[in-house]
Amino acid sequence: MVVTFGPVALVAEIVMAPSCTRRCFLAAATSAAAGLALSRLPNASAAAARKPNILYIMADDLGYGDLGSYGQKVIQTPNLDKLASQGTRFTQCYTGSTVCAPSRSVLMTGLHTGHTTVRGNAGKGGRVPLRAEDVTVGEVLKAAGYATGMTGKWGLGEPDTVGLPNRQGFDDWFGYLNQKHAHDYYPEYLWHNEQKVVLKGNAGSKRQEYSHDLFTDFAEKFIRRHADRPFFLYLPYTIPHAKYEIPDTAPYTNKPWKANEKVHAAMVTRMDRDIGRLMGVLEELKIADNTIVFFCSDNGAAERWEGRFDSSGPLRGRKRDLYEGGIRTPMIVRWPGRVKAGATSPAAWYFADVLPTLAELTGATPPAGKLDGVSVAPTLLGKDQPELNERFLYWEFFERGFQQAVRWGKWKAIRPQPGRPLELYDLDADLGEKHNVAADNPAVIEKIETYLKTARTESERWPVPAPKAEGGKQPKKAKTNKK
Ligand SMILES: [Ca+2]
Image (cartoon, rainbow, N blue to C red; front, side, top):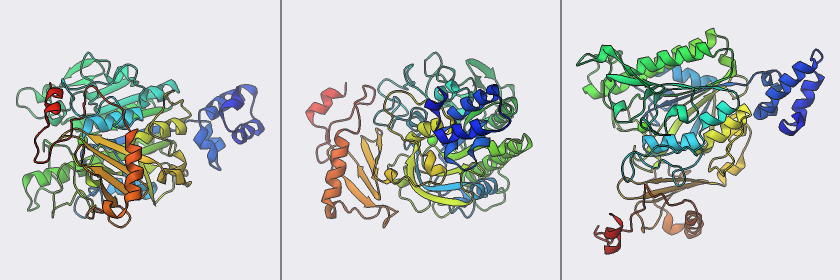
């Protein structure tokens, strides 16, 4: 039974440990069975005794260019820069979508927007929750024995739906369910599991409890409470999403900038400070080396802040675009001794890969059905995965009609509206997606068009609109479909 799980080499190492009794062997072997990826590493046997904790931190609407380690010159992010220096910085990692809810749905389910349940912030008939049959990364890690926590913005289920975090694998969570509610940084209430928690400091017009600070407090307590067992803490911060509210714009208060610019910068720096605080807690508890820390954004920059921060960096577009500025994210992964420190990786991967990756890193069992993502654990651990360059990454987006995007090797294709020809960009030569080279590469277009024929399934809640006639008028058939 033991051998059917873990690679033989790892089991052999455990068997040969001199002081190991049968009981100790079984405990270690169970742990090893649950630690496949660890076994690929030279010093795996010691680490295999204890599954790694996972701290997955995600900002909201943070741009590709907002961090010092990704080229930001103005906003200070010393703690995240340190995280990058201690881990690997991925330059071609992508979110699940160009807006909040579908991106989170992809992250949670390992399915891209052409298959996942929540394909937009709202669908036909309003917001759509995850379904009971959706298997989230929370459920996958919980089943592997992890304590599962979440704090911040959920966005995948309203009260009294099966989409609630507690019904999707999270033991303990605190924050916003509803995305619009999350625009308010001084809410009158938040949720702790299925209970409403009234924030007295924000009653009426009072502004004393900044929700972001409460999430950091919750995260710290969760980590302390679970320091002696494997935990998965998902921390989807709401910063730096609008509204532009913050207790203090330091250290930018005296800058000659617009008010919202000061708030944006101060939000990012405040989040950075708090991530530094959580890293300090991991160090204090002596679990920093056994905790895999991820940091990313949920979609591209909401504002480009051109000439001030240039939050999309060198990329075209921003949130709500399928150009790179809408979907490419900073991604930093830190795991001392395992994920290479101070390294940069151009491997192309995306949110759909997170579930299978975390499953492999923790020895959890991924859901039975086919996922769109693959495990990029080998890539995180510094191994080549040339197959990542051969697969297709897929996005679709329903606001402003219907757009689709595909990444395939160096190529990026976008269909801006149904029925329109694909645009094609060579990202190696043209990171800013300025030159549509579709006409010069018919074989590439044909290959991507063939892929698109089977890339997605229909969703009742997000019907694809019929192609618009030239000039923007809907053909008659589309009108009947719109009811
Ligand atoms: Ca967002």
